[in-house]
Image 1 (cartoon, rainbow, N blue to C red):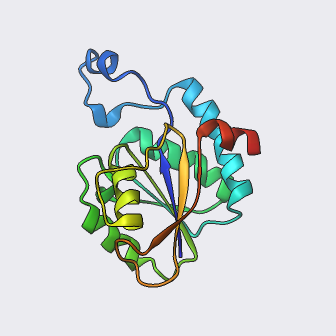
Image 2 (spheres, rainbow, N blue to C red):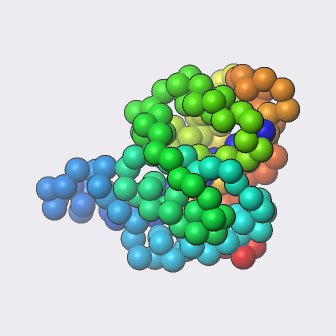
Length: 166
């Protein structure tokens, strides 16, 4: 099984958005973030031809990123609370295990949670040596059990690299 880990694209500035009196969970992508992610999604589709499912954080910026990815891959989106910034690594791994029969799934969420989760499944260390830029992605393969220290990093690409692949 391959798990693609994708950080959401650039969103509106957190402080300025908070001044509007709206919750951070509703902070959307910027116009530039949306445009760049559309190109990055095409690059991801070049690297990974097909995805069975895109799982996304419930926050607006992640859902909008997932929608752009779904256009490139033509696949379903599910909202997973485990991908919210407060999500638990063990619970997220349990959700991924439920999809273990899928060949490839994509997870869309936030830093530092995604980087820490990737680090944990690769090494057992959750301190987070993997860091994803906004709109960046990496791929982790599991050839055996979906357990910490059992993942293998296949690739990690910056948003600029993904856009160049389109």
